[in-house]
Length: 477
Image (cartoon, rainbow, N blue to C red; front, side, top):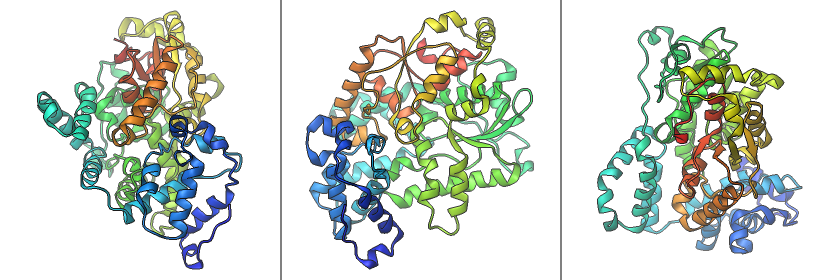
């Protein structure tokens, strides 16, 4: 694609990167075939190629965003299916990030829109605020009809997660002496003492610690589904891995990053980078584990995002290199022998930990939903399915597995109509294969899809934990 950026613009690394991305595009249109919003509307401007033209015109002329550009870029899920499809290697993600930051700086949204977006940015990235918001939402639910449309929508979304709030414990005594606070994760279901996540996260993994990893706690997940991180810690401990949750880590910044709020996203990312750098320098880390794939895509991009920051470029690069999805790290750690001998763990679980026998697990039909941030953002599509199969589960493919479910961070709240249409489409495809349970690797997909089907949905790591001696996932009853 031909571009006309000025020399002054190209002196800015962000504009230079966007120009490089634009020049890679050859207008082929392959991307439209896999774009969820284009499939819904058939509008060229609701596809990647149309959005690229809109972003190019806005950035090249360095003009303020207009309503048309904002409308169609807001409708983008950032599912990144276009990047998987593109034969020319167009890095759409970085281009749309730049465009959204430009919109945030130059476009004045209507007051209700500004208020709603500010509210989401204030509440969602902070676990304590989010937990309190859910409690407040439960109190005012009887008055739901009196609230404006978007706040009613927020109350409806809150109702789904209000019954599963979790908590994060304080640092155990004695941790200050080691120069680092340790945060113990409180398990939501009883476990055998040797496998207790709270004990292992502080005192070290059961058996011989073959690796030491940090777990990103996240922001909304500890409130909505705290059992996910509990399962990840139990699973890693079971294979001899010490898991720590570094003090000061929380939201990765992705939620507000995709809203174009670069300062807030940068501050949240830097807090995590600083916390992990202290941990790396103090005792070392072999990996940084992520159980929400949207966060994993963000962490792996820290090196790019901070490439021009002299104080953070090297630290961010190191964090990105260490970051990995929990299934990715488990596979790297265990190799081809992953979950060999699983039946012993499952039989052990039957008597003491609410589990089941391996033959029962094998009869369970698991529909695997490949989260966009995992299959497109991190190029990890087959791996989680392979791990589930090795653990003994009957994994079945879902039609149109490459199409987004419509969650996409705050998208389901900011673009409810399109989000609902995509959720209904995803639910129909999942139900068409008659599964007993849905497995996926992202909290956003879990909470969103759960609103469209009665089939229970769990995180992949919950099933892997169950198959190796952990408790039966709570969602399965």
